[in-house]
Amino acid sequence: MAETKENRRELFKSIGFLSGVGISMVAATFIGFGMGHYLDRWLDTKPWLTMVFLVLGIIAGFRNVYILTARELRRQKREEQQLEKDRDAEG
Image 1 (cartoon, rainbow, N blue to C red):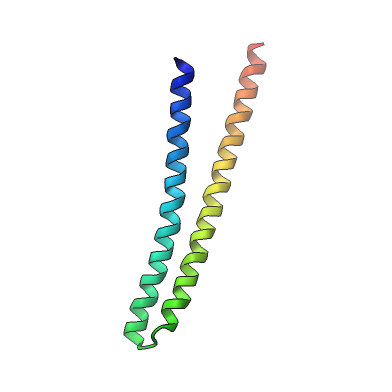
Image 2: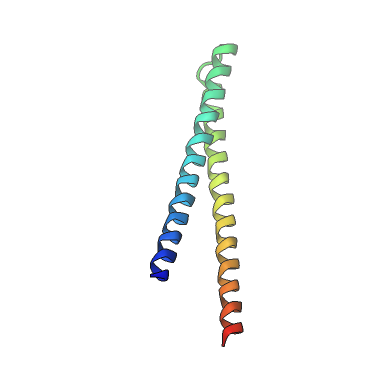
């Protein structure tokens, strides 16, 4: 019973992590596109600023994915180390 709750908890953590990664990627891309589109309309430079800011948004999205993934890997490593310490303390 406890193992099932633990598995379910890990599943929800994974789903939350993956949704955060997806939202981060999409949001950065749309923000870059929106900024470029607005500047193009304001400065009448179509389509150059839209393309530049879209590329910058995509780069920012991948950077966010990298940061979130590295943070998650560090968290998992800390949890594994804590489990090992708990096992060593028990027996």
